[in-house]
Length: 180
Ligand code: ATP
Ligand code: MG
Image 1 (spheres, helix red, strand yellow):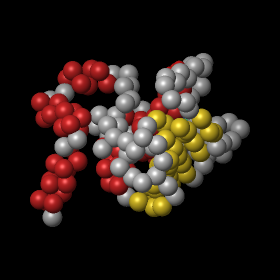
Image 2 (cartoon, protein in one colour; image 1 turned 90 degrees about the vertical axis):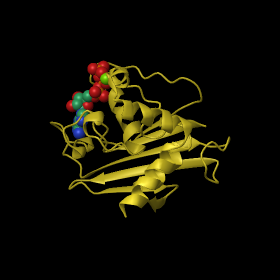
Image 3 (cartoon, helix red, strand yellow; image 1 turned 45 degrees about the vertical axis):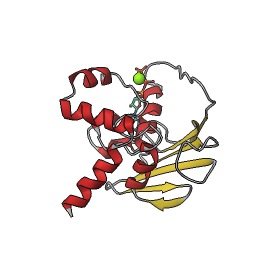
């Protein structure tokens, strides 16, 4: 399983649709300061369901929508699609290619889709959590994240281990069921 491509449209500094094709193995993104390297990483986290504005380096969730520049008007929505190669079946879904899409509109409403079919955020979270790239133990190690692991409370640390072991999903389900 690997990320095959990422398409950003109206996400942060990427006003025009920008398609990034990726290969298996290590990908490096290089460029001058402020050119959007970290925004690409933010897009990866965002499309996988990140809900914290701070983790996306913004004040509020809507800050991911292209805010306009001197020569270009702001946009009304941000959209990111991530295509995962699933020929090894690491994702528990019957497709060799899986595209996850997240769209957010000004006003805050969000839409999610898996292979073009609308779904809930929960569906995306559950799909990814079985593959080891779920939200609490994903592959993104951002600046300051090592600190966060070192400073985590015992409960948070337990969450990391549970997610790695694949039991977090079941605990969350149990918690949801008990709340009802
Ligand atoms: P560095 O090398 O300093 O880490 P970088 O390549 O990682 O830089 P980013 O942080 O990805 O750069 O990009 C920052 C740029 O993205 C800034 O110019 C900022 O104005 C722009 N930006 C962030 N959010 C938005 C938005 N919502 N609309 C328009 N531009 C945005
Ligand atoms: Mg950066």
